[in-house]
Length: 377
Image (cartoon, rainbow, N blue to C red; front, top):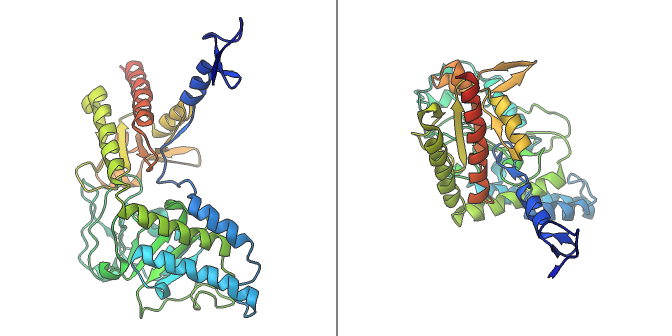
C-alpha cells in the first residue's frame, strides 16, 4: 500500500511497506540475470522436494532390512524416472558420480575415435581425431568405433547421431531435445543431473541391453556390478525428479519460446554491431537456448568479468589454464582463427529468461563492445 512520506523520506516522496518505490525499482533493476544454463542449471523445486524427502530415509540401499529396502525403493524409483525421460529401460541406467565418471566407465581402454569438439571428459579417452566442418558438424564412417556428442556445450550445435554409434555424450541435449535412447541406436550414453535442474554430483551411464562393461570402481558390486560404492540416494532422488519434470516440460514445448528469444537476442546484437560479431554454429541446428559469438580481439574472459560486474552471468568460449588464455578447441576445430577462438562467449538461456532481461544484457554487452572498438581503433 502506498502512502505519502514526510520530508526527507525519499526523492519521490512515496513509500511502499517502509521503502521508497524508487529504491525498490533500483533493487529490481540491479537483480542479477543468470545466462549460463549450459554450465549448470538452478535446482528444480521437484528435485529439491525429492531430495528433502530422501534425507529422511535412513537405510543403506544394499541392506535387506526394511530401512534398506526403503532406500532401495528411492533409488529404483529414480532409475525408472531417468530411464523414462531418456527413452530407455530402467535396467539400462547405471548411476555414477557425474557424466565425467560415466565417460570413463564407457570409454576407458577402448581407443574410440572422437572429434576435437568433444567435452574434455570424453576427449581424454579418445584416439583417432574425427574431422569437424565449419558449422561444427561431424561425419563418421565407422560409428561402432567412435564417440560423438548429441549437442555441443559451447556452440549448441546438434549432431545427427548415426545408428550403432558406440558412445554419445547426451549431457547437453538431455531434457532440451526430443531423444529416445532405445530408437537412437546409440550403444552407451552419458547424462548428468545438474544440466536439467537436478543436483550436482550425480550422473549416469545408459547402457544398451546385452552390452557388458568393466567396472572402474570396484568393491561392493553396486549398480549391478558395474559401479561399486554406496549409491548417493539423496542426489539420485533429485536426479529422478528433475528428469521427470524436464521430460514433462519438453513435451509441453517449454523450449520453443526460449529459441525465439535467443534468435531475437542475436538479431539485436547484429543490428547494433553488424558484421563485427561472428556467430558460431548459427547455420546448423542448435540447442534452443545456446548462442556463441565473438568480437575478435576482445578476450572472452575479459567479457565475462565485465558482464559479471554488470550483473549478468555468462561463460567464455575459451578457457584459462595456468594463467594463460588458450583458444577454444571447439572453435579452432571448426576453422575459426585465434582472434575469434579466444574471444568467444557463450550465452545459454533458461526457460525463466524474459525478454527484458535478455535485452538489458544486449544493451550492456554492446555498450562495452563499442568501447572496446573505440580503444583499439
